[in-house]
Image 1 (cartoon, rainbow, N blue to C red):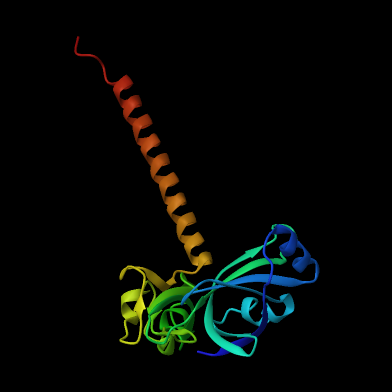
Image 2: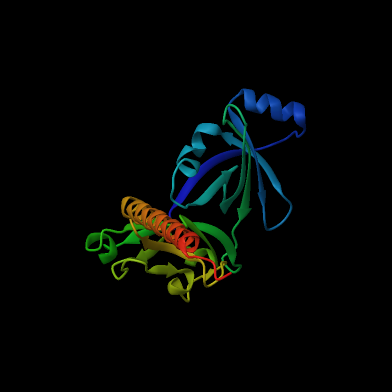
Length: 220
């Protein structure tokens, strides 16, 4: 997995007042959890753009006072109005310990159900959570859709590998080929028309039956 470097500075003072001053200077308060005691540090907000505003997954190399620490992004908080980064949590990696992380899904190939049958490919899961040793974390999860016909589904169980474990049920749908909306709409409209015709025919039959009953003389 590719890595992004973040240059940080250890925080000497904590608290709301200190945090507020840091944010005014476009600095982001961060915490690194994992091996020992949590490490509080700050980094420039602009340095996080390649890590946050991207669909790809990355490891993070945090440099603090010439010390390099490998980590992954664990949690991030944004301001509800301005979308400025308020706080970031990182988790320190240990090459001997497994870690869980969300990995983006990328499709590969062309589905016959789309090319030939006119269906639409629906990507139900854009990210999947996996558990693995840091060295086995993938940049993305490849889904080969070259065999998907109309109505076929690709399940998480189809992606099993020895390198990492999926933290999802085996029957979770990752992607599928469905009938195009236009075709589906036409089917629904046709079904509605048929239902109306059946209802009209039923009404006419009942009306004719009632007229026959009225015309038939009573045996009394």
